[in-house]
Structures are given as structure tokens and as C-alpha cells.
Image (cartoon, rainbow, N blue to C red; front, side, top):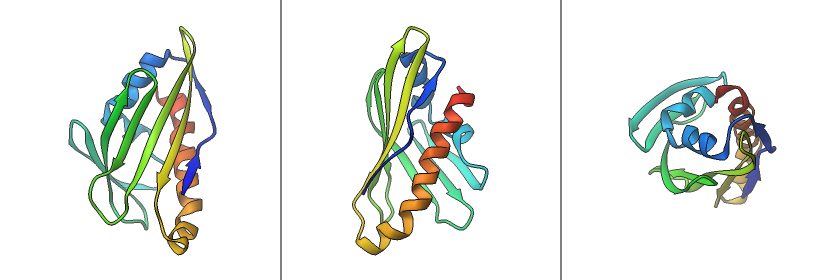
Length: 131
């Protein structure tokens, strides 16, 4: 299953945007209002939970400064990745699109598609004001 957030324009350079997303503790400021838990586990890993959902641990898996950062599931039953693609517009602005990729059976995909789409859209929208 592949999902994409809308592209958002950030009034920061691609490098500044990349640096913000590279610091995993900044993800707390991007989370939706219904977050029930957020905990930094180490320099490249954090745990979060949304109300009514299981805890998820994300770990920084790959970086390609200043254009790409990939977070992936760290343990658990689900294997997926969340990628931030950053495109430089000019020296003081950039565009970000988040993509979610995971392998799920049809039933699971049907259940999680809408909440995950809303989740990545919220992360992208909140990025505009958080950075």
C-alpha cells in the first residue's frame, strides 16, 4: 500500500527542512491532536501512540541530505516506511511530500488506509507551522 500526503511549501531551505526532520524529537510537534504518547527512545528512534491505536516505534533508516529522510517501523508486526521527500524551490523555500509504504493484507489495508492517510496529511500540514 502506497499513500502520499499533499505537497506542502515550507518557508525554509531544503537543508533547514531536512535538518528539522532529521531531529526525531521534532516529530512531537508534528503529531495530531489525538496523540496519547510520544517518547524519544534514542537519537534515531521514537515511540508514539494515537488514542485508540497501538504504540508504534519509528526509527530513522536512511537519509539523503537535503532531499530525503526515511523512517521505518522498528519491530512490531507491521513493516512499513514513512519517507519525507524534500524538493528545493529556492534558497528560502522548499516543498515536502510524505509517502507511506507498507505491505498489508487486503483486510488490514482497508482498515488502516483512511487513518494513515489522515495521519500523514496532518504531519505534512503541521510541518508548515512547526519549522
